[in-house]
Amino acid sequence: MNRYLYTLIFDNNVPYYSYLRKNRNLASVQHYATPVLQNPNVWERMSVVTDTHIWKYGDRFYNLAHKYYGEASYWWVIAWYNALPTEADIRPGDVIQIPIDVDAARAVLGV
Image 1: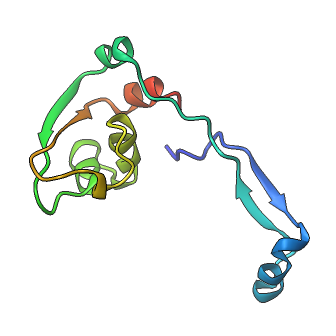
Image 2 (image 1 turned 90 degrees about the horizontal axis):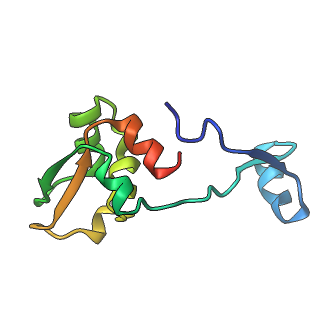
Image 3 (image 1 turned 90 degrees about the vertical axis):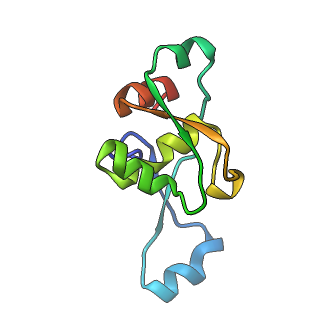
């Protein structure tokens, strides 16, 4: 399921983007509304079954998402669940939690 499925999309035709619209022959530019994000609290985390993963050199969120969910596009679930926005925020040897059930994790994350 696409994480933007229920996100508000709006057309932006303000003058600031006129150069972009002109160069791309567009009437307007579509933007996604900024989602309200939440990190799960301790009680919410306890309701989600996870697997422990020790980060090693070369690991990527999208590879772990493909391994656990069969879909690399769910990389953001692992990143968000661990409050680590990018791989640059993790060092080899760090321990992260990978939610086993992606739907349960998305529910806890408020998506």
